[in-house]
Image (cartoon, rainbow, N blue to C red):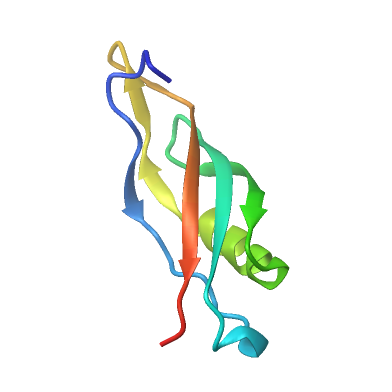
Length: 90
């Protein structure tokens, strides 16, 4: 990752669906995934979470995200990312 000239840049990020039974609860899900050479998210996995109920909605949202891929030496390359997805009642 230290050899990357440009990190992936988000161009579309859908918000996760809030689980109906958790509407008054805050939480965070840390998701790790790969942004491939085309900017698509692959292999998203939960690294840790405050509430198990938030994990599926977080993964489902991340699967829809699109990025400008990472660049190294002028070439698009896959890049591992770690993102916290926050759930906050409104």
